[in-house]
Length: 425
Image (cartoon, rainbow, N blue to C red; front, side):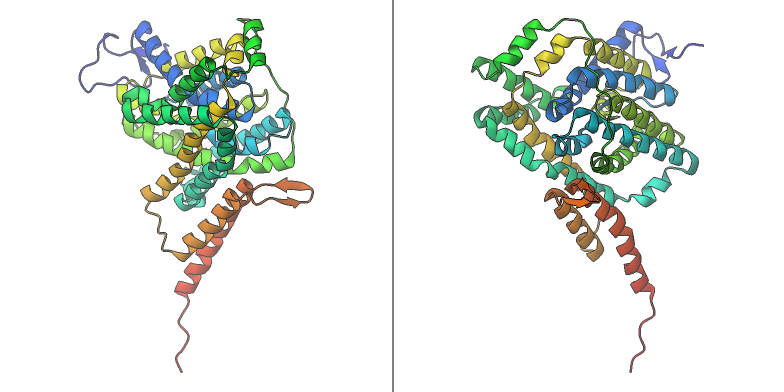
């Protein structure tokens, strides 16, 4: 039986019509939509390895493989692309001094944990996660992940302030002036403009440019065997929390767009993303997540066909086998990345603020104020303590504080409210 049925005549879409996940248009049209998805995920998927010192081509390889695995596990019911998750940038940069294998080993373990959560959700329902991680918790974790990176963005900016400022300006102008799809890739556009300016002003590293000329057009991406270091694994735990909440949110968004009830697929989505991240961690790739950018493209063109995502995944795989492309991407100067990261890290933090706003979190509530404030200071200020020989950083402490303290404080507060008033004299 065919994986996809042809929608209508495969060529025309009526006003307000849409292509279902199990349908496709003609293959030339499907390929064009797939390539659009490939371009959409391109900026974020490459930016994460560039910021964290991982291989861009290896990240692309596991992004493509992860997406194909995801489509199989979700049985073509959930159209999504798995790109490099920006949530992992903070823990990866915090452990930058560690070997790459140690960092990707942490990714592997985080992928296993997400998979385990997916199994639990599949067995017990998505409300299990929502009860354990309410919006006040997930919002705070996202905020501290984004703003924890602020010093790294500023340090990169200061290495080449002129180039970084021009890159930042290009990103902001692209966001304000461009529309539709182009506005969604404003960060990528800014990075390209920054690279061009660096090339014109002689600010590209000669050694890296020489590596571009000597690199082969076709070859295997570099692989790294995972190592396991407890402190790095602990630093990845906040990312697990965020990704679980993010994936469940994306399932709801896709369900709303397609008009289908996907609650039964929530567990499969988490399992697919978890296994994809574990696979990436086993070979030196980046942790993955369902990409909101690609979901936005679907909302615009109303083509929900998973066949288009298969094409995007294949495009990523083909590009991953070009060492010359990987060498070219590695020539992007630190200042350019600093300008882009000023925007990117701020956006991550403000997404957490948006979670609070959309869920009407009461910030006059003393429990929310106290626990949220303590967690944010610990995370953003990078509280670092050594426990039994393992050094645990601010992101882990901030996340653990709000996950543990919020239900405890909420329980005590509710107990106080329900306790009988003391007798009057």
